[in-house]
Amino acid sequence: MKNYLAITDIPDLDLAIKEALNLKKDPLAFAKIGNGKTLGLLFFNSSLRTRLSTEKAAKNLGMEVMTLNVNSDSWQLEFEDGVVMDGTKAEHIREAAQVLSQYCDILAVRAFPGLLDKQKDEAEIVLSAFAKYASVPIVNLESSTAHPLQGFTDAITIHELTQKCRQEGRKPNVVLSWAPHPKALPHAVANSFVKTMLQSAVSLTITHPEGYDLDPKITKGSNVVKDQDTAFAKADIVYIKNWSSYSSYGQVLSQDPSWTITPEKLQFTNQAKVMHCLPVRRNVVIAGDVLDSDASAVIQQAGNRTWAAQWVLKKLLENGN
Ligand code: CP
Image 1 (cartoon, rainbow, N blue to C red):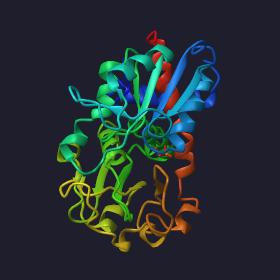
Image 2 (cartoon, protein in one colour):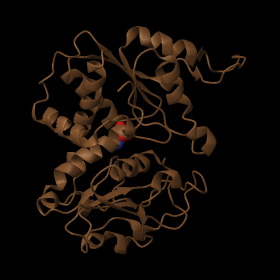
Image 3 (spheres, rainbow, N blue to C red):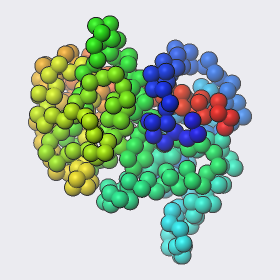
């Protein structure tokens, strides 16, 4: 593995899940592998889980960690080629990525989409520029269209939560449900979740209101059910996430509260566990009663962020970086 930009960079997902769960059992088993190596965390956007779990993962492997909040702490970066840089952007990515590679052995980057221009967002300008100009491996901490550390975490967590299904010799029924949110949110988490589940031994159903179809290139071959209650019937896992419209790009078309996840919504499931990548707006996306109940797996899921990140960093270090 040269970089970790997409869930498909994991060559064998089942094996990776087993290895990540071994790291969970014994976090310091490879505490020296990263000695003398530095991870650079670059944030163009806010974070709680990604920042701290990746830092913890690196430290478990013996790495040093440096974090830069790019927009607030550093020079504004120019990503376009051939521009006359006489505006607010003081440094070009061509220099910045190479300079950061002098200080860091692995660089990890978070850069959200603008949600105004689909073509521009899908070009992954920030992530692909780092991958192009840096001389060290790049880890995607959530880009315009993908959140592969979250996707890997979700696969690990679903593996843990569905032991009973495996004992019964059946595939878990996993439902990805849209839920309302007041702001326009990216598609990255939902995209990576769908891609991960389509590689996994689960039966995936996606449910959302009219106008919220995800990118058809990503959902191709998946089962989409328009009625949330129908989708939830017999679900073992319900994965909740808001995303803005993809067809009416970046727009909030609905805030319908009947899509909020409540205890009543869960009653026809197969005692489903509820997952969400967090942060979550209580009583908008998911009812507080659900988050505070035994059905909620969101804390276990957030905890697993560390083992997903640690597996990725370990693989990159083992590749001689
Ligand atoms: N789930 C997730 O990526 O959380 P943060 O935005 O807090 O990093």
